Amino acid sequence: MSTTTIARTTCKYPGCGEPAAPAAGTGRPPEYCAGRGHTRVSAWRERRRLAAEQAGTTITPAEDGSPLTTAKMTGAELLRSLRAEADRITALGTGLRDQIDTLTDPTAAEAEVEAVRAAAGQRAAAAEQQRDEAVWQARAEADQRVAAAEAERDAAVAQARADAGQRVRAADEE
Image 1 (cartoon, rainbow, N blue to C red):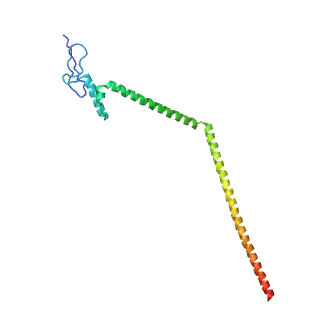
Image 2 (cartoon, helix red, strand yellow; image 1 turned 90 degrees about the horizontal axis):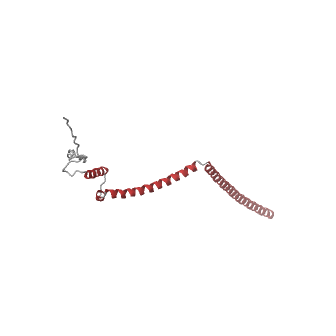
Image 3 (tube, rainbow, N blue to C red; image 1 turned 90 degrees about the vertical axis):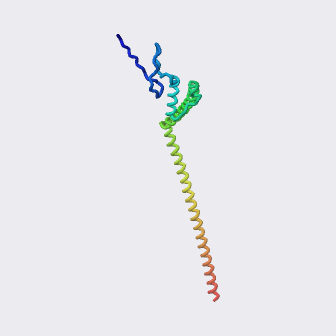
């Protein structure tokens, strides 16, 4: 005499702890309880609802009624966005590679050194020109002061001679 033990599983509907419905013949045994509307489809919808709730989102009636069509459209849009993002990242990578090529190019360093030297030469030439202009201006101002002093001196000498000449004439008249 052999005894066979049939293991009964619990309902796979999220949150349901009831035993699954008894098997009605051969084949795959039921995975959901009877009488509560727990089916593979209703369990799938409940799992999606719970996941959306946990993520802080909601499932629209269109997503609930046509999940494959919605997923296909959303997936296509995400794929377009991913391609655009990949193109943007590729462009960034190309730009970065170009900058790294420039950074590691000894000729670029030589070009920058030459540019710095040229700029320094221009600044030195400008400073020399400014110095020359300042010296010229100082000389011009000094020449003006000398000329003014000489003119003052000449005027003073002329005045002194004129005064002396008057005194001599006044002395001769006396």
